[in-house]
Image 1 (cartoon, rainbow over the protein chains, first blue to last red):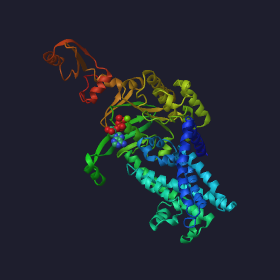
Image 2: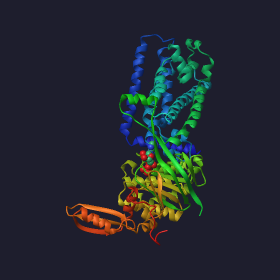
Image 3: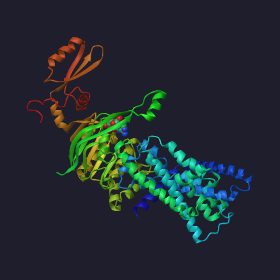
Image 4: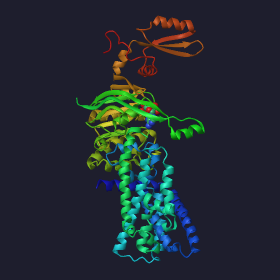
Length: 267
Length: 323
Ligand SMILES: Nc1ncnc2c1ncn2[C@@H]1O[C@H](COP(=O)(O)OP(=O)(O)O)[C@@H](O)[C@H]1O
Ligand SMILES: [Mg+2]
């Protein structure tokens, strides 16, 4: 269980380091929370004018959002170094991981947690969940609870996998910031809404290229069964958590192949 | 004695993208990048025995760090062979690095915001160091490096010398048998330098740790080790003892001239090639001299002259002199 000890010590260090700047951390976390909430409030107010979008009412939309925020809170506490990987390479901080007798991805994942983003997004995620889950008629029983947890884990793995792939690309290209912002951030923005509102192209992207649809849309359908599900294969709901596992494995393999390039180029 | 490190014909060439100026060049680069080859390490060979302590010295950009990176498994050689502790470093990374310690003087591996002890604890788990060993090493290293007074302070508040000592301890807690220190004394004050030199000597003597370190401070080498490898422009230009280098240069003299206008000039030359007479005649012919002295150059000056191409190491050694 050596890994668990590293994880505990690293998390302790990330939190303790932030606690050196208590006020700063608090203010920054609140700022993240407010910034993200402001987006949600704008959307919320706009939605009030409509009864529903493609059959989804406001509370159901908030439930959809809550999954995005909750998974992101976990993603940044694990994958912070991979999100900011090109900077790590540029500053030469990757070398030190290579001289330690542990897996590279393991070290990157356990190393740093983005405490501020995690607290900001996590608080909003929990709040949205509490506001919406009770009003959308979810019946919680062992099966639904288990599915929900699997969906969250799958969502975390999917997003972590995307960060890993973007990181691995920085072994080939100098600047990968724009790739990441298109493949992660822009796709994530689309994923705030039911994918059925988009044209074919965007739907395809969200399902088969950067499969955010399996992070929140299909898992939400498990609970809500909105009529627009008729347009998709029913099985997608059940394989949603597995899509995350699949993307993560793919990312892992791509990383393994790409990291070899580092040994030859240095940076 | 057993061989710890064997390097044969190692090369590392970097490809550096050439940058043109202006928009057309920038657009052109997108499609047709031009690369320049930088020969960082160019056909270097040496071997180091278990328990040895060797100093690498060379000017900035000589290829010292690149050599250390190849030895520690961060980079692989483009050509040639690098073997250490029975491993091919980059191929068997996880196995190999268990038994080595690496410090990059210019890049700390400590957590900036926390006391040293937190980073040390992390090393304990990463290297799976047994508790007794960890505590014994920690106690001993802290005493040797005189660290008790600042163990509890956040690293960002430490002086460069204190931080460097922290980095060295973090890299050695797992009792590695092979240690690489890349510029462990860079930018430090005399006291901190001396502490670190003492510690390096101790690790080598008492624990038989094989130590390779780089520096551009000749004092580090004179005080810490006997064997010295000089590299310049990616090539090894000397490998041997300090005494030998001094011996070889017993025939080298430095003439220091104080001019009447207050200026000062020095000239270093080999008495077997240039006669003292000739040098003096030239000086007197060209300048108005106030005072003159002839001396044996310091080892620092010899090294500098070697770098700058004014002296050649393959010069014939003195009759009956050096080896
Ligand atoms: N990652 C890199 N990419 C391109 N050139 C590099 C890289 N690292 C070092 N160099 C170049 O290789 C040469 C040797 O560098 P280095 O090994 O760091 O020398 P030293 O440590 O002796 O100062 C220098 O000219 C340096 O500019
Ligand atoms: Mg260097």
